[in-house]
Length: 507
Image 1: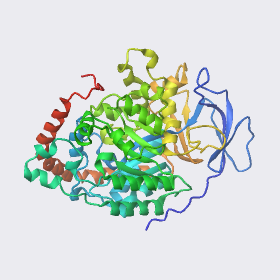
Image 2: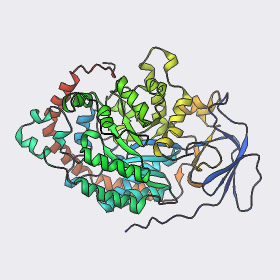
Image 3: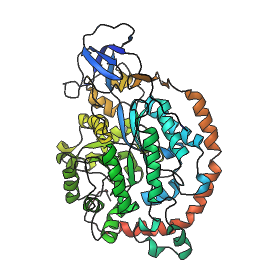
Image 4: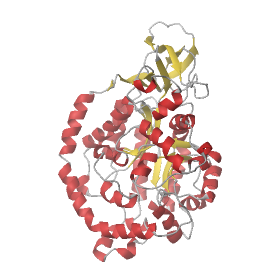
């Protein structure tokens, strides 16, 4: 049994002579000032004198900014970065996480792979994450505990959900039932390995053991994976959990053209957004993931519901999914956050790369440069946008009372020399190398490129040895999934040839 007892709040900290990020200021910076942290929250800013017992950090020449929020993530494949070529999502998923028993992780493996992501994120100033974690071949209490424990031990702020479909594979995709020979169709027509009732019992475990652990740093979320991957009854039960406990509800929608075709052929001509609305499930608690192949009616529904949209531009490029409608969403007031998605579909767990890509890719979407993303918009999506999606009031800001999730950035580092516009240089020049200190809930959890709470070097050595030993099993899994490839390719080609009335790719 895990023991996620509340942690002792750190002593107070005073940052002196820092410049605060202020995207509304002319140069994006406040005047030099002090900022006090007490009880895990920002207590005051201005000209302040040290208090007894307070840790004082001289921030002269440094920028103090809110920690970045990774608004969408799958930690389960942190150990697989660089393993696959770029492939369309539906083919990529054949190799990403086949539900085979010989890929079942031990609790220690689940802990290590989660910790790999924590190390990379905290080193680079990402302080919060929404982990839409999937479990191969199915969730188990000890694996859930291992993932949550890694976040607790590292010092990160995290929302953790169980991304687990509960309908057969053939019910999630168009065309495939007619394309597969009987011997291949049979295993894909079997029920999911865990029923809705069993998954809801696992949510009871997650919420009962971990929701609010670490003085509130670790919290639960719920996930249907995608509306077409679950029954209406199960997603309604998840929505009820979300409402009862005020949890985000994660749902991938219209990531690919094929998913648009699925709605046309399998949902009576309704898009997945319309289908979800018809179920009465779009709400301000929902995080709609990707939302690339949306039409104007979909955008209006998203705007009216108050849901957040999680934009994952690097993953969208890696998988050839298309370009999300950034300006059209902002024009309708749809809240946006940014996410890495997963290491295997990004190959880095870096919000800096995500921000830069988001700032650049949408220049291809319109010749009207007034509609291109601005640096302050990108920074808001990576901070307060993520906080809204996480349902964490005040997170992502520097106002008194806000959680003290902070990043100290060296303004004498190369990305900022000379200093012209700090917001643009954060988005376009910074890669995380200028981060000198990362604080979560008032505690310094990374400093000078190393985590402070764990033996990072020992964990990395263990992870390297552990997952090197896993390569033969993953290679065998690849071989077993190759027999499905021609049929998935045919499905993908059929969907690609369909005119869906939208153009979200350059070709």
